[in-house]
Length: 465
Image 1 (cartoon, rainbow, N blue to C red):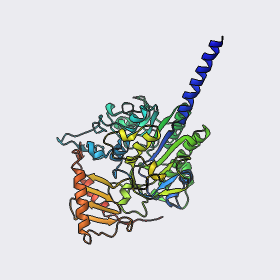
Image 2 (cartoon, rainbow, N blue to C red; image 1 turned 45 degrees about the vertical axis):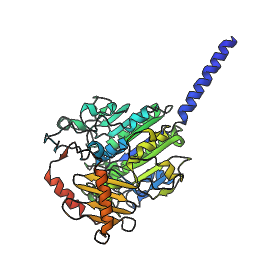
Image 3 (spheres, rainbow, N blue to C red; image 1 turned 90 degrees about the horizontal axis):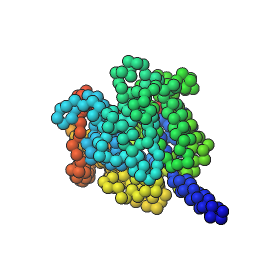
Image 4 (cartoon, helix red, strand yellow; image 1 turned 180 degrees about the vertical axis):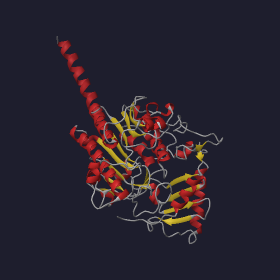
């Protein structure tokens, strides 16, 4: 009898130990917008776009004033953040959309994806006992071999492609673009019963409820506010003082904010808020075509002026990150992987060949150095390097441009002719980095896109509503 009681007590203590250990592991929630404008959030300064939930998140955490993506378009930037490596190191340099070709001039369709040898955030967190899910946009390859469930994630609810309707697809749409179909798990297709942004929030909350006793990683990859420009009538009715595309975009942003708020409220309701690292960001600069506002930055999606690569970025981690603070040194979405791994109890320093850094020592003041000595971008013959306050842009068809970002955030004062020695220095840095890269796995085919990007490079007219 005594022996039986001892066994019960030992078992109970063991259970409590395991439970306490599981609870100590931080949950990780990554809220990721698509094609949002740099200025189009209240916490970024907008007076016309309503984002109360994200504003509250920003007030409870830290705003990063100089956060960068690794590319000015969504496919490569997502490849960089998921791996913690410059995507050019494994050939994912161009966006993976129809109309591209491989080096052998073979037209590519579903074969453009994140190379299978590359490990994702989910691969690393899975080894640390985390359950993980992708919700929404994948865009890392349409072929089955690139599916999220083969890339470290335990669950998937979303679509494989890069953009789709916010409302249920018609039968013709589902046949014409199979990568747009909404998929649960692997090859289980069913269209959403409501506006997709809200549908993804429901699924995220369901995942939280099912995994509240285990550490989890949620990659909530909204397709909002990417085109097509579609909003609900209810949200449109709430937008005052705006017309046309700006009104629709504001309604889509309102839906994005409400969806984020629903997820944040679920964490609070389940008692997980204080044990969860939350990050909100965006995949690239806001595009010109959907009338986003990147003020005060010049440029937009698809070019490498600040408006194409600098993004909103908020991080909240209770009792670690001081609420209502700002961080003013350049960081990169490359830093997400090592930050997440270390928060999860791993050791990112043991992961070979990653380019990101764990941000927490920098934002908590344990390390007062800059997280990155230099940051790089490259697409075809275009190359960009940011070193300290200096930024060099190399073009294939005109002289390089040099800007001091700390003094000229709008990039209107080209200093290349005034400081030729700095141009030479940054060219050398760029060449050395490029010598480490692989050749692109596929290349741009459509000439009109090249011309479009050239035109956008000349856009230096930030506007406000």
